Length: 476
Ligand code: SAM
Ligand code: SF4
Image (cartoon, rainbow, N blue to C red; front, top):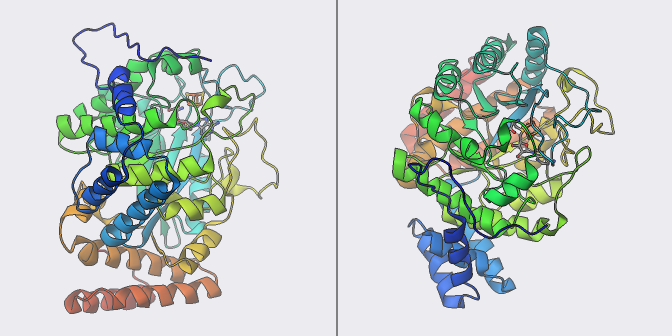
């Protein structure tokens, strides 16, 4: 399939496009075969906390020399280690309904897949699934929906409220994010009032022609409605938004630059970048119909994550269980800040015993990492990470926390690390198996030793004691 390299048709001339394919190609074509020094200067610029330009990012994208690729990855690793430390935030997806009126060629839920087993969780099922997630130790969820008239903004808000009200033992969900279809301004207001965290919408591909080729029917055929969706969210007061591209639909280099361009748009218009960037990669799905020439190899995938880290240093990067555990372990080093654990994507499956084989007519796509949350945490601890379920900034109204982590000296040691430790401690007391708990307390101790703020350390030790005595939800 050949896509027109740069056409962009907008019906409303007043709407100045912030994604201009011609401009993106120009950056990519003008920076081919960059010199070593140029690439090194750009990596150094990022490590110096200077924001990279689109041109700088294009240079990194074009640095194909294996030595330079290694340096880019090392740069991303250094940026993460020096600036953010070793925290990894954990969450789980909860699929609410897979009815869908769209026809996306890559998705098992698309309307033309008549074999798909359609289901929308009842309120009672939502409660039971949430209880099961709480029993596993989850504190942060992302609710996922197909696009269907049944899944209106009111309905989404209703399901969010159902989840928040479930308290089982010491369990509770403290942050509910959303991945659903674009809404109008009123709709975004409605879901915001229900207390959502981030509203995620992935553009899938930023290339208008490719977009048209993959989206055959339903509301999602409208590229601009989707591209401007998170602007409507901002207008509605939803200042916590997540963007993403589905890698494997079109040239990964184009998509990376477009994600950075989208980020710049938010910064310019709303003074705050997206809260998170996601980079799902195409996985097998029922009757998958994609163009294989754009397949992204593991090597390209880890490279593009490292480039995103360097290009947008203060935004959360989400790596999901679409990828297998080995690749997740590898890619996580390059600046990922959030992963899901204990993931199941079949509707209603958190309350069922797990089948060995996935049934692609019940699920949107094939997942690569189906380990339990406990297993994921075990490995994170083993690898020196600090697993976190922290929701403090969001609940204290400290928005833009990634930016603060990045730019406010000492913010991480004062807030992020102690809060990660407190939420990990809760997990260890309430849900961990003994060998994981033992590892976890050792990791906590190691991290406390590095805090070098005696007052904060004392406060933290005091709160840890209170957690051991049964108090919950303590944070700074
Ligand atoms: N229906 C909504 C939408 O399309 O925005 C909600 C989300 S959909 C259930 C979540 C995301 O999964 C999509 O935005 C897409 O990026 C991703 N996805 C769809 N099919 C996929 C596949 N075969 N492999 C990996 N990710 C896929
Ligand atoms: Fe429906 Fe979303 Fe799947 Fe497209 S990606 S078919 S909109 S669920």
